[in-house]
Image (cartoon, rainbow, N blue to C red; front, side):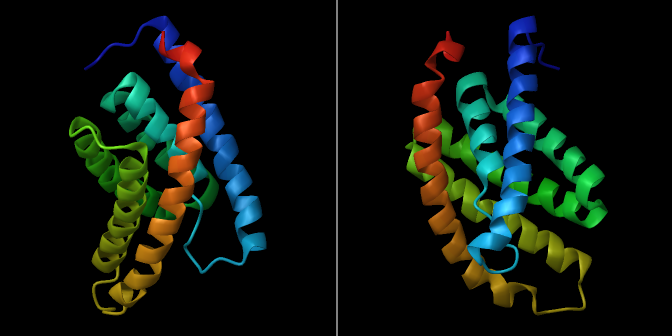
Length: 167
């Protein structure tokens, strides 16, 4: 198990608090945006991407697991399973893109699209008799591209604003 310094543990705690605040904000504004069901901007995922890029893949994993635990408490087990499956798929892909020296745009779009794919895979596994799950894939693919573009812009600005943390 990787050990964090006290400073990194505190930073991770603050990033988790920021992710939860953004998640709550997202729950409030998503209905106002008139998006299709299941489509969200992914604001909390910006924090996971930042953590993974600045503190390493393990910190991204910790935040992904903490986010799923938060979703379990707030929205229930089904939402937690979807959050966990989507988050782990996205994180795995983003780690690979980061190791291959991909841009913030590639990182965010890959994460958004794979997050949706992970959730669809979980849904198809949970509702094995319903073959309709993947009919929604084009909607989620397009939304992943759009929201990934938005989160890449947010990640870029977050990284420039938080340079002091990286030292």
